[in-house]
Length: 290
Length: 345
Image 1 (tube, chains in turn green, red):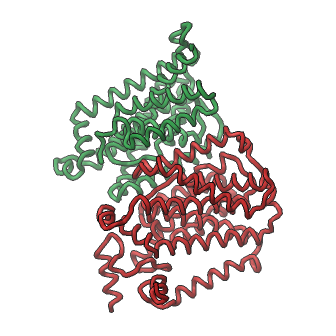
Image 2 (spheres, each protein chain N blue to C red):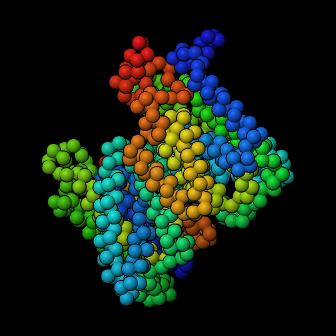
């Protein structure tokens, strides 16, 4: 029974981390209808940036993270402005294939530079337990992950719903032509969105790097988790990603509790496929663009 | 169907079998006889090219003609490879039997997963197929029946001479081209083109969207599994990570995108470019994938329809015409009208 409660709580907190991994993907899909296959690889790229910067800045992860966000914004602007904006009008498939190509390039460049070894970002909270009772033990790290993700998603939600910038974004998402007639530069809005998505991806990269560590080829497996989160929550729904993350996290850890840790990932995938079959557009997916 | 009509349906626009057909036949015969005059290295390259032509054709049948962009077809390569390993290595049966068992297993698996994944459309379908394939990978790693993560050596494949392997690959490649050509010239092909141009109107005119897509998915999946058997007769070792790896999907996508999506010649050209580029860059591990990614991105940006699409758009060149009359051609009516005017002259 203790183990069951533990699995439930850990799954819930793990879900927060998953939501941070997925929210950028959801943003990009909901607003420009782009399936960004490179999302996972870009996230792992940010993990590598944080690791390298931290090494050169006397181990300050915070400073390294801020620098990484800036670098990722530049990369996002280039990616969107130079590559993706050009093919976006031609339908979803060409843009999807462009990001697929970008993903392959990033992952193999990382492999070429850093090899296939295990890497991680140092974490001050790795060995601290925030809660330690007979029923559950909650590590400080997991709690931190969840808090950061929940805050991130709340802020994103408020930005999109309450600010003028957010209104421009929503206008571009619902009708490109009408938005342009109202004086919104959708191409530039898309660039901002990609920057925002990669900034959230850097948060995901930081949390993943501290909690689990990463390999140069980890991007593709985190992309599947991001897809899972986003698909369960509903592509384009920001709050839905938190729900999706929690469902996927709980499903994985309860799967591990009932069937053993070897099939943990499989249970996650099967939950995902089942939910996808029952609700093909996600749980909160009604508000996204067609 | 009278003999004349049957012939007419095979020969586009009533044209006689001309220079192009002759060129194709000469190329086919020349490549079939490659083991007689080519070096071992040339034969091994040819072997890969024909296998990848088959993979490209089948992925193109889905993505280029049926609108089903799947990133999960590697699941069927895995099924083919593992069936071959189980039938020959574990049960000691013949390779011929393993082809048959593979086809049955792949058809069954494709049919079962079609229920959930055909509820998904567009990018959801793409993601769904990929997750199915990743699930299969994790499942095989934890499945005692297939020896967990250790895999098998395919001992039966060691004794096959290179020439026979090449011939198998040649047959699988050529038949894949012929199969896609015949499918597109059949009623299914017409239905697919109608669906691509306007799904709503096609359905109203009596095209069964679901059934047509399902038929294409089944054909593609079974054929990819059979190609998997041929590929693994050459590789001769199965392991979940490699057989169900995303790398297969990467190669299928690149072959079709670079060559030209939605054309029959595209995957042939794409496979030749892919295999030669990969072999050429074999000594620089890592770089070849980076270059392939960059090439694919460049091609999509500069020529979204691939090399064959660009050639056809500019010069009207095509080797295998799947058109009945030009008036039905493509989503672009003006283009169709232009071609038919040219032919009337």
